[in-house]
Image (cartoon, rainbow, N blue to C red):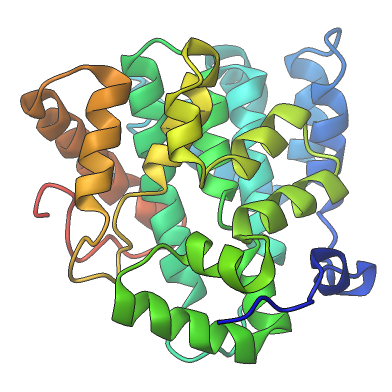
Length: 293
């Protein structure tokens, strides 16, 4: 297949990009100021009742495992940190504005379902290998595929062929995109994140998630991005077969130097958290657990 002349800037014209809710923009601005504390962050959350309810559900889930109920936003921010709550609120905002294109079998909830499981995995793996700020890995993995619905909406004929080839050839979507366009959905999501003025480290985590080999060769500094990239190799909740399992396994053991038993235990934890977390976000639990693969 020959490379097309479609430029990413042409696809993501300003008029097709959704705007983030004002609460998310306020939180992002606050996160850039080290002098802001929980009382500052609580104001935009409390001004958005829907977001406030989601944040309280989030902090009371088994993701954090508190033994008592957290009843206020400021208490939540104090206990779990402004970074974790802001990252969750950011994904919640993106979830609310990304379109659901009428594209064959594509289902937006399935994409968010995949993103949630990958985010939980990235955070658990980051904590296991002691990378700094594992909450950022949660947000990075949640947002890594956020450009796909926009690409399907804007380039339906091109993606119809790419999705079919992915199914027939068992190849990564990113590789097929690079062949056709010269860019992939990681580049697209990073551009979207940059246009939204997301923190630079998020843009990097998103941009690099299809570059597993380069990240593994990058040493400790690239371990956080490698956790997000490894999460992208997990099977989709709609896949019967896990076509990238051998690549995942090889990459996991290179990154962690751990045993298959450790991976099995990690999968069990991720499956348990995903099953509990999904209903909080009005998502179905995956039909097939990671352990079942």
